[in-house]
Figure 1: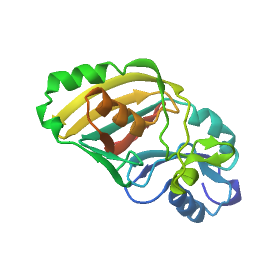
Figure 2: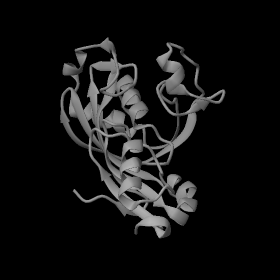
Figure 3: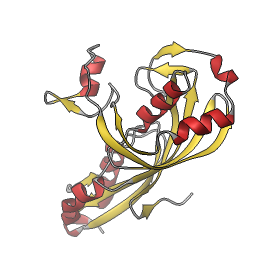
Figure 4: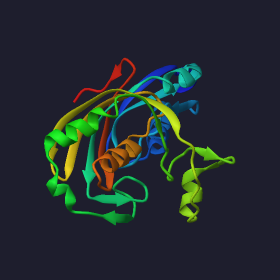
Length: 209
């Protein structure tokens, strides 16, 4: 799969560090083709499955983007950031997480299963008035965002090593895992951010660890 005739869906296991755009640029050079794109952004701090559509397969982008996603995530309690991830500025701290136990965290996690409304992060690619939210947030603007419908199909508590809570998540396309970490913290009375994220599946496409 190289050159003008390149065509197909290329699963890539993105490491922590590069942006999704970086991965596309490297693939474009390696495959010697300009017709290539990804089907769902992974932030630099995140790793895991990134699907690249090459050549005529770019027509599948909308379909692939709409598939459900699976993740392993670490929510860190006691620290809230403006971006809801480890790359943002700390805006809130608390140490009362030390009073939490696994049973309470399991109960709070279970409450997020099913269909729900989720407020997107201020720092996101979501467009308001034709401009990406992250651009407005970087200028210090804060916009009241309407909640969006999402669905959490599975939410499994993999481990608790406070202040960290490790989760396995299977969710609808469009779900912000950063916002889920924020909301889990709020349900526990704590600020929180998404400290680690690994995408393990997109629909039937899976990454092997």
